[in-house]
Amino acid sequence: MSHRYVLTELIETEKLYVENLGLVVEGYMATMKSVGVPEYLVGKDKIVFGNIHQIYDWHKDYFLGELEKCVREPDLLAQLFIKHEKRLNMYVVYCQNKPKSEHIVSEYIETYFEELRQQLGHRLQLNDLLIKPVQRIMKYQLLLKDFLKYYTKAGRQTEDLERAVEVMSFVPKRCNDMMNLGRLQGFEGQLRAQGKLLQQDTFTFIENENSILSRPKERRVFLFEQLVILSEPIDRKKGFSLPGYIYKNSIKISYLGIEDHCPEDPCRMVLTSRNIDGSMQRFVLRASSPEIIMTWANDIIQMLETQRNFLNGQQLKGERDNESDILDCLWF
Image (cartoon, rainbow, N blue to C red; front, side, top):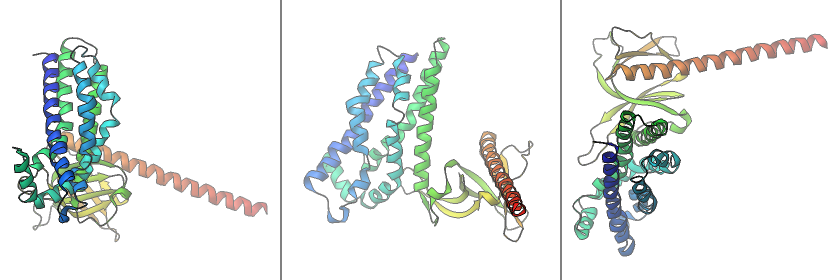
Protein backbone atom coordinates (compact mmCIF):
# COMPACT_ATOMS: atom_id res chain seq x y z
CA MET A 1 0.00 0.00 0.00
CA SER A 2 1.34 3.48 -0.84
CA HIS A 3 0.38 7.14 -1.07
CA ARG A 4 -0.93 6.41 -4.60
CA TYR A 5 -3.46 3.97 -3.14
CA VAL A 6 -4.70 6.68 -0.75
CA LEU A 7 -4.89 9.18 -3.62
CA THR A 8 -6.92 6.72 -5.71
CA GLU A 9 -9.30 6.17 -2.79
CA LEU A 10 -9.63 9.94 -2.32
CA ILE A 11 -10.53 10.46 -6.00
CA GLU A 12 -12.90 7.47 -6.26
CA THR A 13 -14.78 8.45 -3.09
CA GLU A 14 -14.90 12.07 -4.35
CA LYS A 15 -16.59 10.91 -7.58
CA LEU A 16 -19.17 8.98 -5.56
CA TYR A 17 -19.68 12.00 -3.30
CA VAL A 18 -20.34 14.32 -6.26
CA GLU A 19 -22.75 11.73 -7.65
CA ASN A 20 -24.67 11.65 -4.34
CA LEU A 21 -24.82 15.46 -4.19
CA GLY A 22 -26.17 15.37 -7.74
CA LEU A 23 -29.06 13.18 -6.58
CA VAL A 24 -30.08 16.02 -4.26
CA VAL A 25 -29.46 18.98 -6.56
CA GLU A 26 -30.48 17.51 -9.93
CA GLY A 27 -33.05 15.17 -8.39
CA TYR A 28 -34.96 16.58 -5.42
CA MET A 29 -34.19 20.28 -5.90
CA ALA A 30 -34.75 20.32 -9.66
CA THR A 31 -38.04 18.39 -9.35
CA MET A 32 -39.34 20.63 -6.56
CA LYS A 33 -38.42 23.70 -8.61
CA SER A 34 -40.13 22.53 -11.80
CA VAL A 35 -43.25 20.99 -10.23
CA GLY A 36 -43.52 23.36 -7.26
CA VAL A 37 -43.66 22.49 -3.57
CA PRO A 38 -46.75 21.84 -1.44
CA GLU A 39 -48.08 24.85 0.44
CA TYR A 40 -46.87 23.47 3.79
CA LEU A 41 -43.29 23.46 2.49
CA VAL A 42 -43.21 26.90 0.86
CA GLY A 43 -40.19 28.79 2.23
CA LYS A 44 -39.00 25.71 4.12
CA ASP A 45 -37.36 24.13 1.06
CA LYS A 46 -34.44 26.58 1.30
CA ILE A 47 -33.82 25.46 4.90
CA VAL A 48 -34.03 21.77 3.90
CA PHE A 49 -31.17 22.06 1.39
CA GLY A 50 -29.13 24.94 2.81
CA ASN A 51 -26.15 25.72 0.56
CA ILE A 52 -25.76 22.17 -0.81
CA HIS A 53 -26.08 23.53 -4.39
CA GLN A 54 -22.97 25.70 -3.82
CA ILE A 55 -21.06 22.71 -2.40
CA TYR A 56 -22.10 20.50 -5.33
CA ASP A 57 -21.13 23.03 -8.01
CA TRP A 58 -17.68 23.62 -6.50
CA HIS A 59 -16.83 19.94 -6.13
CA LYS A 60 -18.22 18.97 -9.53
CA ASP A 61 -16.84 21.88 -11.57
CA TYR A 62 -13.53 22.45 -9.81
CA PHE A 63 -12.34 20.36 -6.85
CA LEU A 64 -12.72 16.87 -8.38
CA GLY A 65 -10.68 17.95 -11.41
CA GLU A 66 -7.97 19.43 -9.17
CA LEU A 67 -7.77 16.18 -7.19
CA GLU A 68 -7.36 14.21 -10.44
CA LYS A 69 -4.36 16.42 -11.37
CA CYS A 70 -2.67 15.18 -8.18
CA VAL A 71 -2.33 11.67 -9.69
CA ARG A 72 0.45 13.06 -11.91
CA GLU A 73 1.78 15.43 -9.23
CA PRO A 74 1.01 14.11 -5.71
CA ASP A 75 2.93 17.00 -4.13
CA LEU A 76 0.07 19.34 -5.18
CA LEU A 77 -2.41 17.64 -2.84
CA ALA A 78 -1.49 19.41 0.40
CA GLN A 79 -1.54 22.88 -1.18
CA LEU A 80 -4.95 22.17 -2.69
CA PHE A 81 -6.48 21.90 0.79
CA ILE A 82 -4.42 24.72 2.31
CA LYS A 83 -5.30 27.09 -0.55
CA HIS A 84 -9.04 26.47 -0.16
CA GLU A 85 -9.35 26.69 3.62
CA LYS A 86 -11.67 29.73 3.36
CA ARG A 87 -13.74 28.15 0.59
CA LEU A 88 -14.25 25.03 2.74
CA ASN A 89 -15.98 27.21 5.33
CA MET A 90 -19.09 26.71 3.19
CA TYR A 91 -19.32 23.41 5.08
CA VAL A 92 -19.52 25.33 8.37
CA VAL A 93 -22.49 27.25 6.91
CA TYR A 94 -24.07 23.95 5.80
CA CYS A 95 -23.61 22.38 9.24
CA GLN A 96 -24.98 25.46 11.00
CA ASN A 97 -28.23 24.98 9.07
CA LYS A 98 -28.27 21.16 9.42
CA PRO A 99 -30.31 20.86 12.67
CA LYS A 100 -33.11 23.05 11.23
CA SER A 101 -33.00 21.04 8.01
CA GLU A 102 -33.25 17.72 9.86
CA HIS A 103 -36.22 18.95 11.86
CA ILE A 104 -38.20 19.76 8.69
CA VAL A 105 -37.13 16.62 6.80
CA SER A 106 -38.14 14.41 9.77
CA GLU A 107 -41.73 15.72 9.52
CA TYR A 108 -42.13 14.73 5.87
CA ILE A 109 -39.61 11.88 5.36
CA GLU A 110 -42.33 9.20 5.24
CA THR A 111 -44.81 11.23 3.20
CA TYR A 112 -43.80 13.93 0.71
CA PHE A 113 -40.07 13.11 0.51
CA GLU A 114 -40.80 9.37 0.30
CA GLU A 115 -43.09 9.97 -2.69
CA LEU A 116 -40.34 12.04 -4.33
CA ARG A 117 -37.74 9.32 -3.63
CA GLN A 118 -39.87 6.68 -5.33
CA GLN A 119 -40.62 9.03 -8.23
CA LEU A 120 -36.87 9.69 -8.70
CA GLY A 121 -36.01 5.99 -8.32
CA HIS A 122 -33.46 6.63 -5.57
CA ARG A 123 -32.28 3.89 -3.21
CA LEU A 124 -31.25 6.29 -0.42
CA GLN A 125 -33.68 8.47 1.51
CA LEU A 126 -33.23 12.25 1.49
CA ASN A 127 -31.82 12.37 5.04
CA ASP A 128 -29.15 9.80 4.02
CA LEU A 129 -28.11 12.10 1.18
CA LEU A 130 -28.17 15.32 3.21
CA ILE A 131 -25.71 13.86 5.75
CA LYS A 132 -23.13 13.21 2.97
CA PRO A 133 -21.46 16.68 3.18
CA VAL A 134 -21.03 16.25 6.96
CA GLN A 135 -19.46 12.81 6.49
CA ARG A 136 -17.24 14.01 3.64
CA ILE A 137 -15.73 16.99 5.45
CA MET A 138 -14.83 14.64 8.34
CA LYS A 139 -13.28 12.09 5.94
CA TYR A 140 -10.67 14.34 4.27
CA GLN A 141 -8.49 14.60 7.39
CA LEU A 142 -8.37 10.78 7.73
CA LEU A 143 -7.26 10.33 4.13
CA LEU A 144 -4.69 13.14 4.46
CA LYS A 145 -3.30 11.53 7.64
CA ASP A 146 -2.83 8.25 5.72
CA PHE A 147 -1.15 10.17 2.89
CA LEU A 148 1.15 11.89 5.42
CA LYS A 149 2.06 8.52 6.96
CA TYR A 150 3.30 7.17 3.61
CA TYR A 151 5.17 10.39 2.80
CA THR A 152 6.90 10.25 6.20
CA LYS A 153 7.91 6.60 5.65
CA ALA A 154 9.33 7.51 2.25
CA GLY A 155 11.39 10.33 3.82
CA ARG A 156 9.69 12.99 1.69
CA GLN A 157 8.99 16.62 2.64
CA THR A 158 5.91 16.68 4.89
CA GLU A 159 5.60 20.30 6.08
CA ASP A 160 2.75 21.16 3.67
CA LEU A 161 0.93 17.90 4.41
CA GLU A 162 1.11 18.53 8.15
CA ARG A 163 -0.43 21.96 7.59
CA ALA A 164 -3.14 20.42 5.35
CA VAL A 165 -4.01 17.89 8.09
CA GLU A 166 -4.21 20.79 10.57
CA VAL A 167 -6.59 22.72 8.27
CA MET A 168 -8.76 19.67 7.63
CA SER A 169 -8.97 18.94 11.36
CA PHE A 170 -9.97 22.52 12.19
CA VAL A 171 -12.75 22.85 9.57
CA PRO A 172 -14.62 19.69 10.72
CA LYS A 173 -14.27 20.78 14.35
CA ARG A 174 -16.00 24.07 13.51
CA CYS A 175 -18.66 22.13 11.59
CA ASN A 176 -19.24 19.85 14.56
CA ASP A 177 -19.39 22.84 16.92
CA MET A 178 -22.03 24.54 14.77
CA MET A 179 -24.20 21.43 14.51
CA ASN A 180 -24.12 20.70 18.23
CA LEU A 181 -24.88 24.32 19.13
CA GLY A 182 -27.78 24.22 16.69
CA ARG A 183 -29.15 21.24 18.63
CA LEU A 184 -29.04 22.95 22.02
CA GLN A 185 -32.60 23.62 23.23
CA GLY A 186 -33.88 25.69 26.12
CA PHE A 187 -30.99 28.15 26.56
CA GLU A 188 -32.62 31.58 26.75
CA GLY A 189 -29.49 33.72 26.43
CA GLN A 190 -27.66 34.73 23.26
CA LEU A 191 -25.00 32.14 22.37
CA ARG A 192 -23.13 34.69 20.24
CA ALA A 193 -22.77 36.92 23.32
CA GLN A 194 -20.82 34.17 25.13
CA GLY A 195 -17.71 34.60 22.99
CA LYS A 196 -15.85 31.90 21.11
CA LEU A 197 -16.73 28.24 21.68
CA LEU A 198 -13.44 26.76 22.92
CA GLN A 199 -14.37 23.17 23.77
CA GLN A 200 -17.31 20.79 23.89
CA ASP A 201 -17.50 17.19 25.03
CA THR A 202 -19.65 14.62 26.82
CA PHE A 203 -18.86 13.92 30.48
CA THR A 204 -20.24 11.85 33.33
CA PHE A 205 -21.35 14.53 35.74
CA ILE A 206 -22.00 14.68 39.51
CA GLU A 207 -23.19 17.78 41.34
CA ASN A 208 -22.40 17.85 45.09
CA GLU A 209 -20.83 14.36 45.09
CA ASN A 210 -21.10 13.95 48.89
CA SER A 211 -24.90 14.11 48.78
CA ILE A 212 -26.77 10.79 49.04
CA LEU A 213 -29.11 11.94 46.25
CA SER A 214 -26.27 12.68 43.82
CA ARG A 215 -26.19 10.20 40.96
CA PRO A 216 -23.88 10.31 37.92
CA LYS A 217 -25.56 11.83 34.85
CA GLU A 218 -24.45 12.26 31.27
CA ARG A 219 -23.89 15.89 30.29
CA ARG A 220 -22.77 17.60 27.10
CA VAL A 221 -20.67 20.54 28.25
CA PHE A 222 -19.88 23.61 26.14
CA LEU A 223 -16.99 25.86 27.18
CA PHE A 224 -17.32 29.44 25.90
CA GLU A 225 -15.09 32.42 26.70
CA GLN A 226 -17.84 33.85 28.93
CA LEU A 227 -19.86 30.82 30.04
CA VAL A 228 -19.88 27.07 30.69
CA ILE A 229 -23.14 25.43 29.57
CA LEU A 230 -24.21 22.02 30.88
CA SER A 231 -26.84 20.19 28.84
CA GLU A 232 -28.54 16.80 28.83
CA PRO A 233 -28.29 14.63 25.68
CA ILE A 234 -31.69 13.51 24.36
CA ASP A 235 -32.44 10.41 22.31
CA ARG A 236 -32.00 11.00 18.63
CA LYS A 237 -34.86 10.34 16.28
CA LYS A 238 -34.70 7.09 14.41
CA GLY A 239 -33.02 7.54 11.04
CA PHE A 240 -31.37 10.83 11.98
CA SER A 241 -27.70 11.09 12.48
CA LEU A 242 -26.99 13.46 15.33
CA PRO A 243 -28.27 14.04 18.88
CA GLY A 244 -29.95 16.97 20.57
CA TYR A 245 -29.33 18.62 23.93
CA ILE A 246 -31.54 20.23 26.58
CA TYR A 247 -30.06 23.11 28.58
CA LYS A 248 -29.69 22.27 32.29
CA ASN A 249 -27.30 24.70 33.95
CA SER A 250 -24.56 27.25 33.33
CA ILE A 251 -21.60 28.82 35.12
CA LYS A 252 -20.37 32.33 34.33
CA ILE A 253 -16.61 32.37 33.79
CA SER A 254 -16.38 35.25 36.29
CA TYR A 255 -17.67 32.84 39.00
CA LEU A 256 -15.78 29.77 37.73
CA GLY A 257 -12.94 27.97 39.49
CA ILE A 258 -11.07 24.70 38.92
CA GLU A 259 -9.61 22.46 41.60
CA ASP A 260 -6.05 21.12 41.35
CA HIS A 261 -5.68 18.12 39.05
CA CYS A 262 -5.46 14.74 40.82
CA PRO A 263 -2.78 12.51 39.15
CA GLU A 264 -4.34 9.38 40.74
CA ASP A 265 -7.58 10.06 38.86
CA PRO A 266 -6.53 11.59 35.50
CA CYS A 267 -10.00 11.39 33.90
CA ARG A 268 -11.60 13.56 36.63
CA MET A 269 -11.96 17.34 36.76
CA VAL A 270 -13.71 19.43 39.42
CA LEU A 271 -15.20 22.81 38.51
CA THR A 272 -16.49 25.20 41.16
CA SER A 273 -19.02 28.02 40.98
CA ARG A 274 -19.14 30.83 43.52
CA ASN A 275 -22.72 31.71 44.50
CA ILE A 276 -23.91 35.25 45.35
CA ASP A 277 -24.14 34.32 49.06
CA GLY A 278 -20.47 33.28 49.05
CA SER A 279 -21.15 29.52 49.12
CA MET A 280 -19.46 27.22 46.61
CA GLN A 281 -20.95 24.61 44.28
CA ARG A 282 -18.79 21.73 43.04
CA PHE A 283 -19.28 19.99 39.70
CA VAL A 284 -17.38 16.73 39.19
CA LEU A 285 -16.79 15.89 35.52
CA ARG A 286 -15.38 12.57 34.33
CA ALA A 287 -14.14 12.28 30.74
CA SER A 288 -13.45 9.27 28.52
CA SER A 289 -9.70 10.03 28.45
CA PRO A 290 -7.02 11.96 30.41
CA GLU A 291 -6.23 13.94 27.23
CA ILE A 292 -9.72 15.52 27.24
CA ILE A 293 -9.27 16.59 30.88
CA MET A 294 -5.83 18.08 30.17
CA THR A 295 -7.11 20.06 27.17
CA TRP A 296 -10.09 21.42 29.10
CA ALA A 297 -8.06 22.21 32.23
CA ASN A 298 -5.44 24.08 30.17
CA ASP A 299 -8.11 26.18 28.42
CA ILE A 300 -9.92 26.98 31.68
CA ILE A 301 -6.71 27.88 33.56
CA GLN A 302 -5.62 30.11 30.66
CA MET A 303 -9.03 31.85 30.60
CA LEU A 304 -9.01 32.45 34.35
CA GLU A 305 -5.45 33.80 34.10
CA THR A 306 -6.50 36.20 31.31
CA GLN A 307 -9.48 37.31 33.40
CA ARG A 308 -7.28 37.84 36.48
CA ASN A 309 -4.76 39.89 34.48
CA PHE A 310 -7.58 42.00 33.03
CA LEU A 311 -9.07 42.69 36.49
CA ASN A 312 -5.63 43.52 37.92
CA GLY A 313 -5.06 45.90 35.01
CA GLN A 314 -8.42 47.57 35.64
CA GLN A 315 -7.59 47.89 39.36
CA LEU A 316 -4.20 49.49 38.63
CA LYS A 317 -5.83 51.87 36.15
CA GLY A 318 -8.38 52.85 38.82
CA GLU A 319 -5.62 53.48 41.37
CA ARG A 320 -3.68 55.63 38.88
CA ASP A 321 -6.84 57.60 38.05
CA ASN A 322 -7.43 58.20 41.79
CA GLU A 323 -3.82 59.38 42.27
CA SER A 324 -4.20 61.71 39.29
CA ASP A 325 -7.44 63.14 40.76
CA ILE A 326 -5.71 63.77 44.14
CA LEU A 327 -2.77 65.52 42.44
CA ASP A 328 -5.19 67.67 40.43
CA CYS A 329 -6.93 68.69 43.67
CA LEU A 330 -3.60 69.54 45.33
CA TRP A 331 -2.49 71.56 42.30
CA PHE A 332 -5.58 73.72 42.43
